[in-house]
Amino acid sequence: MVSQLLRWPEFLPHYRFVREIKELTVTPRQNELHLQMSAVGGWFPATWRALYYSNPETLELHFEHTAAFTKGMRVVWTLTPVSEGTQVEILHELRFRFQALAWLMEPVLRFGFIEPVARKTLARFKLLLEAQ
Image 1: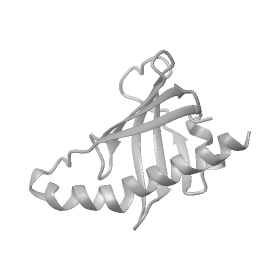
Image 2: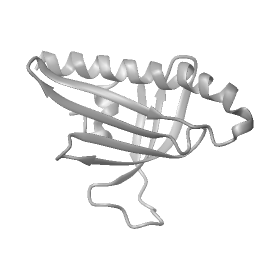
Image 3: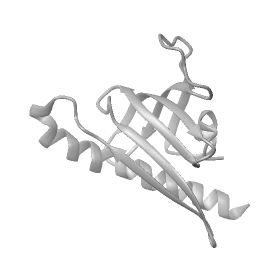
Image 4: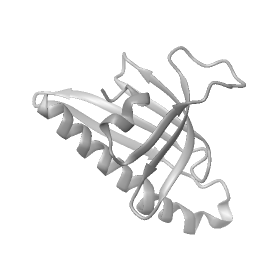
């Protein structure tokens, strides 16, 4: 369920849309998608583009933001089987590309959008998966 990115708006009410962008200028990796995504976060809604691929061997989902305010941000979801089910960790590596504004923009993006969306996403997937 988590790796079905194009279906996220069905599962996650805070996601407005996830669309595949077909016109790539580079050859994608196997199972890589270029996506335009939009969600409502804490303080504001946002739309961004990201390259996405999954690694079934390591149980990881990888995102590299390619446009908008989070351009360059790397995100890794790690799914680890544990006795109670699956532990999910999300690592966001954000370095705002305009260093002169990083002191302001990184906290705004982190607390105003990234962390609220991640919390909502994990909570909703937890609810859906545990109900199965």
